[in-house]
Length: 485
Image (cartoon, rainbow, N blue to C red; front, side, top):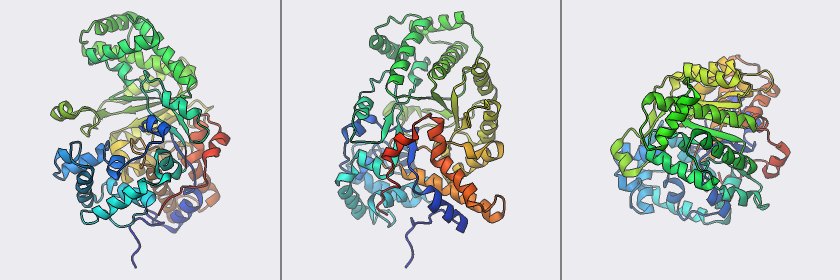
């Protein structure tokens, strides 16, 4: 009898790779240090009524594939029933061969629901009913889905105006051992391209802090107050989603004048916007360093390129793409500006254009400090690159230009509670790459040496890099995932 598509040695093409994965990677806990899971459903231990709600409601990866397959928008983001949406997705899945969605879909079906048959239009109904029945089981609440994957830490992505109420409830709930920490994501504080939206956000900041924000210094003071509030509630990471590094030269007077103009509702020219954003990014870096946080920069996404669909559906609906921005000089200036003042925090740099892999992998070597192992990181393959080839290419560039052994590894970057098999996906690809190198004689067939690298990349490095108490995290470690198949 043929084995199922998802089986114990999936993606592991060499004997050495199989041994490395099963002995060193498979059972390790997960630190998901960057994701977009909403914290409230975790705090409430919410449940999903259907697999469509869990899988399709906010997944722009699947929406893009469905649109490309000729599926009407009604079945993506519209008013079709949950069954109708699932049926259209199931009909699309066979067309996704060689797209990572094909692998992720079947990994998630197998791991969470024990479904090992292929999803297509014909199998859609029984799989839909089986998944819905499984989601009704006690172990498949939002918290249960996290626990089943052996996750010990989740870092959400949070606006500085968030009151972090869900995080505080979770911190006080001894029944849920997984730590759920906020991440400071101040993108809206830098969104001066749209004065109306920016000022609405600043007005809310003023109300929240009780400060009259009429100038740049008061604006920074209000943000500093929120930064401290996040710190008091467990935050130890920032994240910035930027088209490019902002590192223009500026004077205090230029920044003050630009802020006053935008606060007055005026549209800034490109030069003024760049100076103001450069000042903000520097100040955020200063705050992060002062509180010993790590900072993350996601560079290179060209957002909302389909204006008609942007007007219809809003942001994060599947209409962003890879940009070709100039990164080398401004990124070097940004990091150097902080480094020469001894204010460069631990940093992760993510690129979206694969043409920049070696640029980023080489850049991090310029700012390591000789004290903190892996202080500056070339981040895990992101978004359009978070697939088999993209992961291998990122690992290859990092290995050739830096130290793979100090890499802090994988994250989900996902809005889905079913996405944790992506950590398994990464681990299998990593072990297959190292097993292939063993087979070719490129690295020693020394399981102690290579196994330690795998364990460090998949778990131990990120715990140390974040400055976390490994013993405290171990309270949530179940010794391995609790999968259905």
